[in-house]
Structure formats: C-alpha cells, structure tokens
Length: 278
Image (cartoon, rainbow, N blue to C red; front, side, top):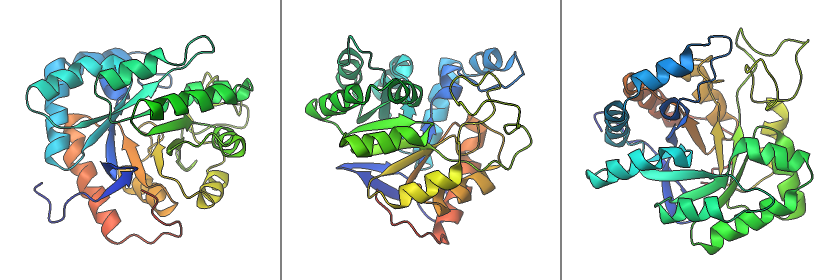
C-alpha cells in the first residue's frame, strides 16, 4: 500500500474485511445508467477479463481485501486466485420459495468467504411476506460454515428480519443522501426496485441511520455514491459518519487509488455516534 496509512479493517464473525470493499456491478455490467442506454454495454466493453484482473490486483495492492458480487463473476475471481490473487469473495445468493439451497451451495463450493441474500431479493421476499424463507437461507449459509447476511434497499427488510429473529450475522443496506441532481422527483414512485427511473436506492436515509444505531450488528452500506452520482469525498463521509461499518463501492481501475486515499483520510479523523460493530 503506497499510502501513509494502511486501509483499516473490521471483522464479520471471524472474517477480516477492509472498511472499503469493491462492488461487482461495474464488472458484471449491471450499470445503473438512468436514461443513458449505452452505459451497460460500455462497461462490458471496457471491463474485459484482463481489465477486471488488473482492477482486482489494484484493489488488493491498496488494501481493499474483498469484492462483493453476483456469482456470475465467480469464474474471473477463481482465475484471479489461480494466478496468485488473495481477494475475498462476498457472494450474493438468490433464494426462491422452491429452492433456497442451490445458490448458497454454489457460493460456498466456489470459495465465498461470506454470503448474503441479495438486496432486490430481500426487498421482494419481505414485501411478499416471505421472511421465513430469509431465515431458512441465512441458517443454511451458516450451516455451510460461513457468515450469512441479508441485503435490502428498503429498511423494511432489516426491521422484518430483526422482528422475526432471522439472526443474520450482518446486513447489507443502502445508504446515501438525496443531495444529487438526478434524485427522485415528487412524481416518482417510492418503490426502489420497481422504480423505472433507476435514480434512487436509499429511501428515507435518516430513518435508516436512526434504526441502524439501535442494532449491534455489522452493516455493509452499498449504493453509498448513489450509483456514481455523489463524489466519494461526500458519499464515503456520509456513510461512515452515519454508522456504516464497511462500504461497498463499484470501482473502475482508474478510481481505486483515489477512492482508497479518500477513505483512509476520512477514517483517520472520523467522528461517529454508532459504535463499530465490524
């Protein structure tokens, strides 16, 4: 690490995780492009396998020790490991009412260090009253020997899990302010997942901040830059100050060094009310 201070780390159960981890959307091509239709194709064209490997090497060099991504990206991570890379993989899992084990087995068998129910899936299951399925999935992840978590864009997901005693080891929950120009307008739906405008992910951040203060569990915050609409200087500070233990950030190769530098500086002089739970 070329910076004066190393990247701070936290712990989720017995797994040491850097305070900044790499997100997988830019690598997988799931771009939140709002109304720019070419962006997903551009991401995929830029992020060749070689470019992804280069990005992972940079992350590792600068102290980002984990990537959180869809299992679709598993092959490139395995290639990275085969070539000597050490980055940890935090895998999404996608349980369905008929089958909550297969995606968990795939994650664990392919070397994931942690696994969690993906945010969109968490939102839908809670909205459809299927919290029991979340509980079964988390229990099965833990049975397979790694920490198990639950993700959501909606705070309802975390509240429902806590009320039902789901016993997740960690939560993956969005956090960003509404202070960016393409944020939700009054005529748009409050729904995150089915919102066709694709321009906001953290509904009522103040409520999320207040609720998470009451929970003594590790919190990985994602969409902290509102999918590229907020500068890291503001987005990282907002997330860490308001209680996130770890932040998940999609990074192109040319952003890694700057993002890590910003995060280290913010963490070195941070004031926050919520204790560190990771």
